[in-house]
Image 1 (cartoon, one colour):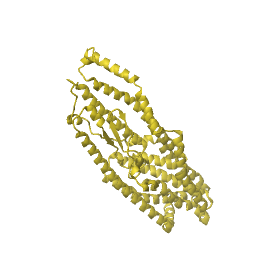
Image 2 (cartoon, rainbow, N blue to C red):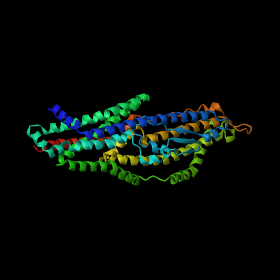
Image 3 (cartoon, rainbow, N blue to C red):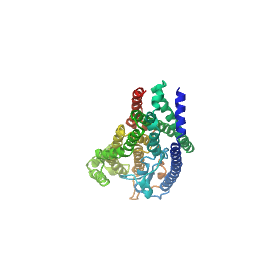
Length: 465
């Protein structure tokens, strides 16, 4: 019986020429978006590799100088593109890609890719993720809205029930037929994206992220299909079902996300760049704590080397002063940048929770996190770059400390010291961290799938005989 029900649904779908036209258009858009995004990701990776190698070479080839001058000479740390950015670029175009690392300062990151996008960038990007999570549900609406309401409107529903067809099995046949159709549509796109990952020699973590993205998208589209069937079962006409479902799509995909994002920014405000920098400068200017740290460190050195005057110390006190100054700044930078990033993450967390109203927010949040193009991954890169900056300062200051200046001759260092600075190697967050950060969004998507399914189970037996 189930095979016959599914075969009937497939026969009706094959006869619908307009449906197949829409299907082909969406498929071509998706394939084009994947190939275009993959090529863009390849170019970005090559640019990142060239910039990182060039910056490393610039650091190693600098002339002989005082180590502290080298610390001010500084270098850039570049953020690599996430392996799944070709599918879901997320915030990647709007987040800076490099950080300038120098002594005494933790700088804000620079250069957003969107700045170079040109006027076309103002209209947004047609990404594979956008097609799958925003446009494909429209196709689901056109498929599922007449699935039950159309049978009732044509009078065939009464005939089917009169022949002894179990309402629950009949609705299940509808759902399975439409699900197989969606699977056949998504499978080529899935295989193409997988091939892109394999060609790029993606690591196991990236493949696990891609698998998780498939599960997330399946939950979202499956829930949308069940919602459509539930509305279709409750409406007397196809027109009524279409109006309701198109309204729900527009509200959940276009209207609600914008309203919630505005409210999140109001609920968790962040300071302007000018106010942020001024607050840091004010705290760095308070030298009482710095003086106390320096006095304590000096006293410890005098005791360690059993001398009474700093001039008798067998170390260069300038290196100690510089390192203490850096450590005083670490606490200030950690507090201010930590509070800033916490505010951004609080906004994102709020968007996840409001996925109950607009599941598009939840699926976008989850796919962005799995792609590694969200705020959490950006913060991890920013923190990693700062730890690298601190490593550089510690190496330079340690060299100064171990080499006291003699006869007034200024200390100088060269390539041997520059080579002791390790190359910046960024290791991103693991997929487990991404999933933990999306607990709210994943819960919403599971509910989004289960609740309409349970509702459909209750409504199906009540279909008119």
